[in-house]
Length: 307
Image: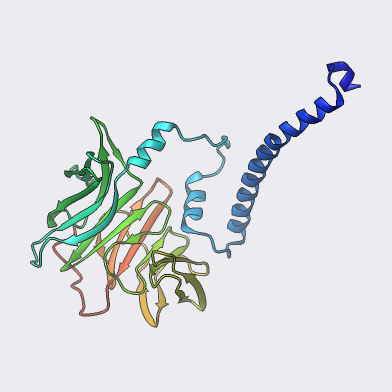
């Protein structure tokens, strides 16, 4: 009857259904995929024993409760271009061997762009990327101990990137990229356990090893296993450990994570390592702790600790 009403033959109708079917399937699959992801995240949150990443914990904490859920918006083209153009820092080296020496921050940016590093006090340093997009930016020791925001300037408006640069240390510099809601990435040499990230509820342990190497992380009777990726980076959640002072063992070495500190956004000595706690929002915070390389004891207070 429908064929007669619309004036369509049976063959035409079948052809139309064949063309529409992939579109309907794609839309249904995307909606089903989103529903499944939300259901899994909420179920794991209720159970409290699943191995969620720090990003999942922080995402749920920041979202809050009671607000009406809005459909996700596609990122605007300008926002996508800004994130793609953000400077990427891949190396930090000492300028010299003296105690008063600073560091050189190196990385990649769009060719000819102006790269800026600024801190919360409004102090900034800048350098230009060459024709291949490489840049080198000297940073004096007076800027160490603060969290630096990498920005790129093409024209008049600077655009910050998604990462923050952590610099601290006295003699041996600790440099790392901090990522909101994700594991920090240590750029300078470190021990088997490179960094511990906490969000007030859960912990993530990260470090470096040979690509493909299996790494065991032990804490509070739990043994978590990670495998280093092609770049030698590994990360694993500690599902049974909350964000508090705790002993962690990696590669036969024991580390005393001191727990979170005040959310000042500045580097401070904490136990045998450097710690920074940042407020990501009114409700969410993130602590990153970088243990020292085993060796001579480090002074608990240094000139690089901001007051």
